[in-house]
Image (cartoon, rainbow, N blue to C red; front, side, top):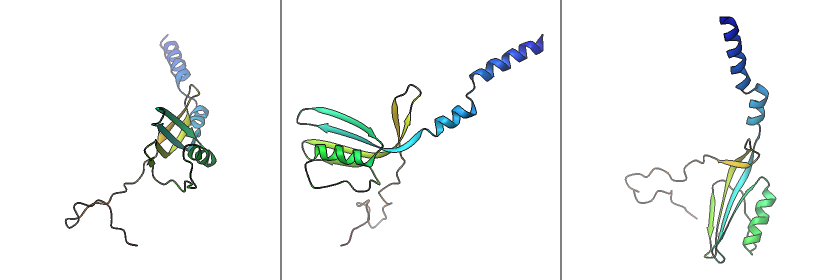
Length: 130
């Protein structure tokens, strides 16, 4: 009788454990992408985009800014505020949730600031020379 209970409990426990195939499928479901938010202060709208393609980033950027400027490599999060729009872009890891919705996880960026020394306590950035 005890062996029957042990067998039933083991089958019950194994039925709720994720299989190795599903665990591998969930971990490989991530990709690199970009998270973009745009706050348009002229008509008070807020747009949020999660895109995987670099061309999509340039299309969104050109939609909100009529200029000859183009985004280069994005190593750190970028925020642009021109009085009318607040544009923010960051590189993220994109994954699909179990319910089918797309979500993202922020990358861990190294600090831009360096440790200040006693002689240079006010400036956290290294000096720039041209």
